[in-house]
Image (cartoon, rainbow, N blue to C red; front, side, top):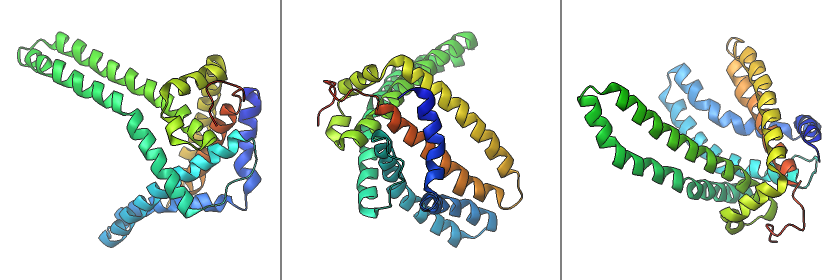
Length: 251
């Protein structure tokens, strides 16, 4: 499927499921409770919001993984909410993220331990140019490492959704093979198209937030869920471009 069709179908996706769309909107209300509590200066509401936030973390990542799965099948149906499955999938997504972030975290601490003391010495000795250059290189190295593994994680989630196997999603070499199978140029075009789309939605979001009192609620409970649905479904559809006979896929 070409990129333009993926984007077009992804934009239509949430609006083809208006009957089920409130499910996602209700889930996102959970993260709106904390700011409401802060606004009301009510600690009890904030406490409820904290609990609701943890419930959100336990349910929503798994639900969006299911949307990716729907996208890989090129179905237009918004999945029904199954709490048990969503919680299980959320835990798998969390484990996946933790594993893929091991290298960026390791790079961070290695650079911090090796370069950190020297940077402090430069600062004490007023070697500001050296400090800024060293600090900049460290930040750049950490950022590049993080972006690489965040990129891999993106497609590892798609692999997890497609194969329904955490062990397969943890095989970095196969995730890389998937990426090459989809095509780097296709992925680049998809990223650019999605960035443009997200910028447009963000502009709309900024207008909505400006609405007094209810603007941020509409943004959190309607616009952000729609944006997330589009993004995850689009990822699934992009992943569906993988050749079913590819050696990188194991069923």
